[in-house]
Amino acid sequence: QVQLVESGGGLVQAGGSLRLSCAASGRTFSSYVMGWFRQAPGKERELVAAHRWTPGTTYYTDSVKGRFIISRDNAKNTGYLQMNSLKPEDTAVYYCTAALFAPGELPNEPVYWPYWGQGTQVTVSS
Image (tube, rainbow, N blue to C red):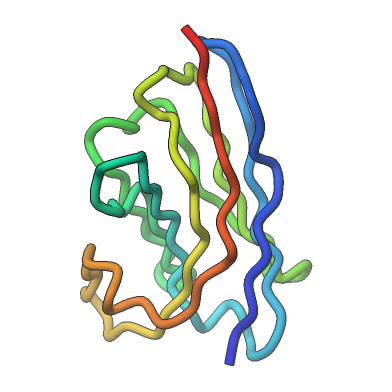
């Protein structure tokens, strides 16, 4: 079992930055693929970014490439999502997730990710 707790959300103006944190407890965090999903009102939950510790690969959805950076500190069992150049369309509840996937496997459907944080609201004003 892995328990995840997000923090760092809030209200920011367009063009600003926020850093989300995801504190993990339980089993060895480095073994898990870490992901960040978001869900805006009336929309489906979408995979925004993911990080696999070995071999150190990352994934970003097209709309955040060049603006968001996913990282993790396994010594602290904590993951991060640095969000820069924020846009109003980034407004959503952001969720930290974790899962054990086979090499090369990275499903973007939420159902395949078993561990979730409670979510943190990010609101970007225009």
